[in-house]
Image (cartoon, rainbow, N blue to C red):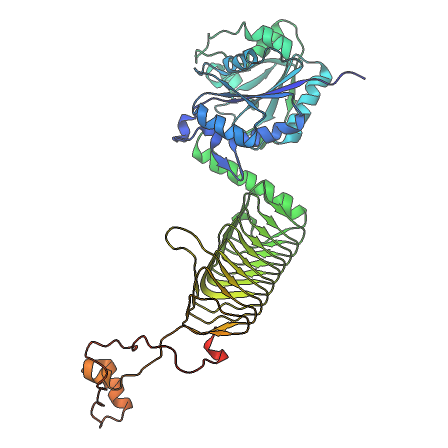
Length: 511
């Protein structure tokens, strides 16, 4: 059995990408879960290369920093002057003189390239013992692309750039994808002989093929099954077109795996997302980052999930979630916002216009309406009243609120952390809870209501309100006397007296 080939991957990522008109290097532009160069590195990953060399130039520091995060094993090689693809590969191999075996060269802006295609190219190259093999594709419009020129027998004669092509060569539709496999020793030998005698005044890597053919070395052409894999990106229009193509590829894969996408054209799923069989994704939905959607869960319409886990059977409707966890059979929305570390247990509910951050909501508990829950722990089977705020920040530090199990908190409550409401406790509507409420107790913290009779007829005479009040009072009565205890500037809702009377359960929240 022959010895396995040692493989080295060289990714060309030094170009500025002027047509992108961006301060961000072209290869760092994002595309459904990865950068352009991230997609290319992923396509090469199954090769099991002994080393990966990424040639950087424009925005080198930014590209290096990105590589540290996504491919720490890769080595960045700096190309100070961008003097052509041949020069870039030569710089890379000079930085790694120990390289032998197969050298795979990839452009850093071909994000649709499949790992299978790279593997097939390398297998064909190594199987034929070729000095060099180029990946080619038949395209509908070859404008701007290098052409594959074959001799009368169909063998590769040369690869010619658009600028240097003859009229007959420009009519060819078989193009160079910019993806190659080389024998390392023969590549090194020819790289040192490259010329800059061309329209660009650069060292073309494609000239290596012409020189190898002239020397009688075996060279090969491997044709890609799908030409869209070879599409590069030069501006934002092309980036958008690639995004649509990748969206369609991803969506088709998930539908064939048993996921229902109700409107694939408005569903955008990153390549890093995972979905289980029988999940349903409704229209206008974005699933991004490391998001996971469980079996029988329904997500959408109008949902964005970023790094969020949705458990089996859960429902998320018209909501936005970042770094959150939605437990099995839980429900979210419509119009909810789950911020990082919001965790809903099984059958929990976060309803309309509710924001949750860094909080745990226990099994079966509900936060149905108009509420902010921050830095809190809520036990099981509790209900949080409408229009409540967990007051977690004192201007310097965050503090935590704890609500026990089977608790019922009133509408329009403020929980001023740190504070705890015990198991089975109630809080009255309109309360500002600043002290712990023991288990089974009713917490009440609101002023007694006082009605100042005749205030509208006296203070708002001539208004529609006064006229309505006068009709309701029979129209013949004068304005009732204002109690002497109420001064002229006294507020409508009375003073700050303590609560009188004991609130009933109806004084708490709606569900």
